[in-house]
View 1: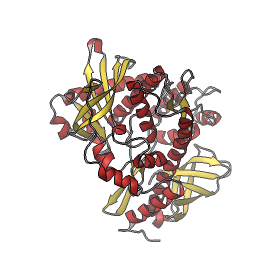
View 2: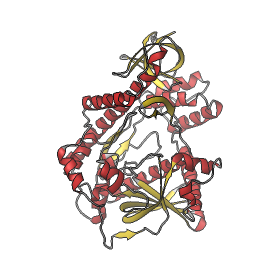
View 3: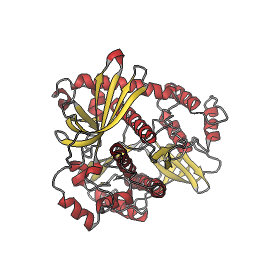
View 4: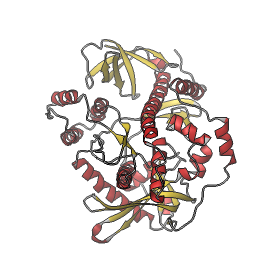
Length: 489
């Protein structure tokens, strides 16, 4: 079988659109939504005593190299006693996207942007998400600011939430910032061009490292799995490359986790119902215990995040090369997160993987609808108005957002498999070392290392379970359906 060439992107794009439709996601905006976007000519602007002018601070964004839908900025200030004030600014999308509008209806239906190997299907029209509601470089924008005072030990102390106008001084990228922080490359030009920004970014990095260390001491899990991104040469799919974590990504991750925690606590303090992001105690803990046993380690019989984290850290140090395989197995066994409504007076379930009690999604309103819901609840609480969403409506949205996020993940996964099938089409009969990533009545799935893709084990799966290592032979691919079939060799 020969590989498609110049039609790769077009073929994968068509597959993405078909699968989105099958999963109940809208690949296109309605005519009404397009008309609303066309009518918008400038970003939202408001003034008043409740909106602070913070444009004088050295805000910067750090995101993927090609990202234009910028949801958050950050800045730091050194305080007495080695404490650090961290400010996270989140784009005020609600100022432009009104509840009940045609644009909002589309966002409410899909609930998330869908990132496929062929193209991005944004939750909001690109005119908004990459411009009018994006915290673009050199642009004054309305934002919700989460202010946190972080001690030398990484503990978040005093905090506040308020509205402000901000100005992005530098659009930075994860990889180049990480290389600079690691000392393997000079400062990126945009970083070097803003006087004093380098010092503030190093302060942010030190603070994030302390926050990360504290979270993991409390049981947050070190789960470094292998994610992939498609590499195109024009419209020809050239490769699937691992998209690995780095220091800059961890900086943003730690700040966002903390900001989401502050947001959740703020809404609780105001007596507002909130959409929480939770990960319940894993049902397949016994299999995680069994995995540890095969590696000569012991875990308690009852689920214990702290003990699991100690095990993961130990294994990462002992075998960094194979650690992503172990982490992937644990991720599969932990299960998926979900959205749930927390009402005043209730005790939250918390997030097992992050080892936090209070957690919501609030820092990516251009890309996720739950974040826009939370932003509207925040703004209402700040203004002293009634909740924007009632209890019954929030219950329905929690279920819908969980389902649609799962559907979007399945679309992204299936298009990645279709991309992998394109790359593997000429390699039928080859053998690969593989890891079992799924084992249930409906079938057994394995992942190979190069290219890093998953496929179904159509023969020889009896007796296997998640985390087992096997050798497999590629027997069949179906690009249209994203099927990759292996047999145990």
